[in-house]
Each structure stands twice: as structure tokens, then as C-alpha cells.
Image (cartoon, rainbow, N blue to C red; front, side, top):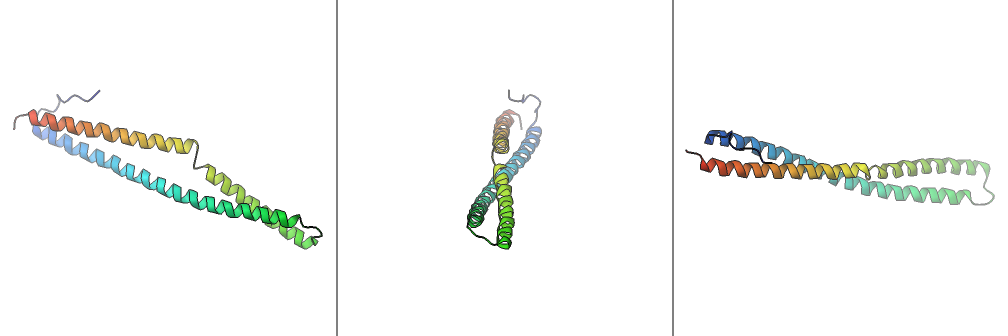
Length: 139
């Protein structure tokens, strides 16, 4: 239900309300810009994480295959096992990191964006209503 315009009885009050509404719209527009920037950054981070994850997967495969070679000297085997542990840790960390950019966090980001869009629509409608009401008031 739209706000009642009956409390605005002068053009000066309408002008004051319009200035406040415009400032509030700008606030939400800045928030929307910040959300867009966060999305862009997340996309870049996700692409970077995917690239790193591909490298970590290749490392795990390489060290696993290397350990499968027959007749490895003990020192070489220990070195490869250590490197495999490091590669698996990196793989697990990157897998977990890429998972944080989906699920509930992604859903809530969408909800936040919808909330901002709805608020801007409400404020824009209020501005139009105040502008129309202002025109009906005596000068």
C-alpha cells in the first residue's frame, strides 16, 4: 500500500520529500553498483580458482602416477609422497574454496539483489506520486 500523500500540504514539503527520496534512491543505486562489483570480483575469483584447481588436479595425477612406477628408490618415493600430500592439500583447499561461491551464499546474494531492485521501484513510485501531488498544490 503506497504511503499517504495527505501529510504533504505544501510544495516545500513535497520538495523536501523529493530530495530525501532522491538521496535514498542514490543509496540503493550505490548498493546495486557494489553488488555488481562483488559479482564481477566473484566471477574473476571463481575463474582463477578453476584454473588453479585444474593445475592442482594435474599435480595430484602426476605425483600419483609417479609413485606408481616400479622400483622407486626410497628417497625418491618419500619425496614424491610428500609432494603428493602437498598437492592433495592444495586440491582440497581449492575444491572447498570453489564450493563457497555457490549454494546458500549465491541464493542470498540473489535475494539481496531482488530486495534492492524492489526498494528502488518503491522509491521511484513514491517520487512519481509526490511529483504528481506537488502539481496539485497551490504555489
